Length: 309
Image 1 (cartoon, rainbow, N blue to C red):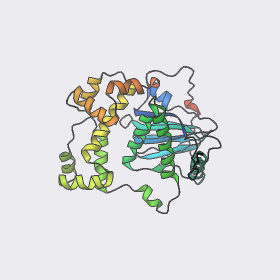
Image 2: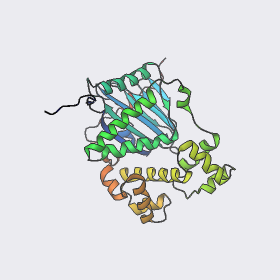
Image 3: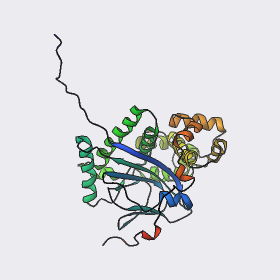
Image 4: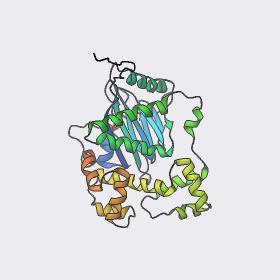
């Protein structure tokens, strides 16, 4: 007779359903802004996260107008109208957007959505994340677009984990807004502005008036990777935006971001993303960046111009 051991019952629940993840690189205007920055809302159970990497503009949510800054995370709940307005051609906006919905009746999903609702109802208009968190969104973007169902589930579980990490109440809430040392912040700003330049670790250390060894040590302690590794990933991230939203040849993109040649670019890019530039373009091309979607209605005049009282 076979004995069934049910000491450890199976945990059966479905992960949060990710409906779309997009990475928009240096949004300024034209058809791209008409689509990505349109004034719109989502369905009854749909939530969306916008994580901004850079740029100058305004995020509108219903009647609230909030300045866009790097590392700010915005949440929009079901039926909330929202839009992105750019303000300076010299400071285009780059961001990730994650659209998702919870499974009705699923305990894990319901708990995560309660955390999001509580944060919004408590008046939190945005969170400020750490600079390294951009790579968590990069991973979500990559996993969610893969045809493998297992990788899609991995992305959903990662999203659940991040919601708890960022939105669950903590005794050390001040730690969530930690921005690191002044030196690191300056280095991150220079890197973000120099993805098309050949900037060495020695150059950055000299700009900060630090020895290269000390700079590497404090950077690794703060970001969990060396300055070179971080800057390389920034370049790969920026290049991925061009691959997904432009028709520029791979060789031109390699030259644009300061790689030695297309082969060097391909090797580095594949190490960062798991795909060659050509394969990445096939997997992640964003048609909306080439032409407005058929049937899309954009209502720029409907955007509110004053904050809520």
